[in-house]
Image (cartoon, rainbow, N blue to C red):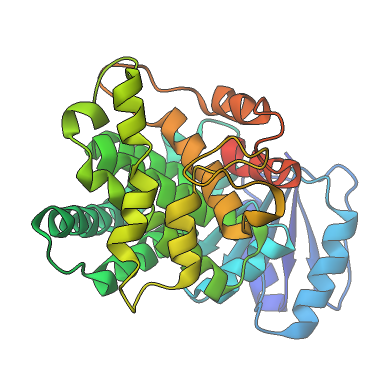
Amino acid sequence: MPVHVVADSASKLSNLRATLEPKYAVTSELIGGAKERSSDTDAIVVTADLSVIENIAALREMFGRLAHARKRIFLVDNKTRLLTVQAYALGATRVLVNPVNQARLLAELADRDQREVTSKQALQGSSQAANTGATAIVSMFSAVLAGGPIDVTSAKEAGSRIADSIAEDGLRSWLETVRRHHEGTYQHCLLVAGVAVDFGLNLGLSSKDLERLYSAAMFHDIGKARIPLAILDKPGQLDPRERTLIETHPAAGFEVLKGNPAISQEILDAVRHHHEFLDGSGYPDGLSGGSISDIVRILTISDIFSALIESRSYKPTTPREEAYEILCGMQGKLEKPLLAAFRDVALNR
């Protein structure tokens, strides 16, 4: 597989070539310098300072002519969400934080199931973030049941750790970790948070919008604390009474959170309306079209996809390809351009 290397300094370029050349045919390009063009490039590896405006402009132009590359891996020097968002906005399919050793980079480039090559370090990072997230969700549910105050700060901090884990270790590690170690409603909430974050990164959301999105994901199902576990975890189809009770959870979550000054209107909107559809067939308010905000549209897609791929003892996990096909078949309910943008998250991340 031909690999094209791009760097913003000669030393970075040389080091990256030395890492890859034992395994791959490498062409290279120095930003602002000489190019070795390759028409059949299958993968691009970029190492550059994305806080430099000139680098961003040059990379944007370069990706216009190398958009055919199937894998576009960015190596960034700092674990900051801004740089990660910028990389995905430029077209990255994967972002790694330096220092990246040879084995890790070669594994990312290899054409085999990523689950076989995900590093132990990545799984450990995902596990730590998942445990923090689960603890925050359990605390929120317990507070609702006891009628006590919800620790909003801890929930948002847990969401931030999840976002960092997704940015550094990828969605696949997150899905594997959460489905292996967490169950039921808590598993679902963690899956939604991870999928929503990866979707937001893929869309190039700003850091503030990404924070709103992962916060909304953390809180979106808090109303389920008032639904009996026997119904939440029921194997098989719900009867009409149970379905009606389940459909009260968005409004119940809204009521729990609406008086909390630490919860913004955007998050309240997402909690109440993440089961609304563009054609007006959703609940609890039957919203349609322009009445449904962007954050709700993103969260709804993430929520449905997560529900399909989650692991339950009484049903097999739906393959990601099939789950995406189901989303695409929901004619008139979900935004088509967003579904198209979600394809890479659903199938490749």
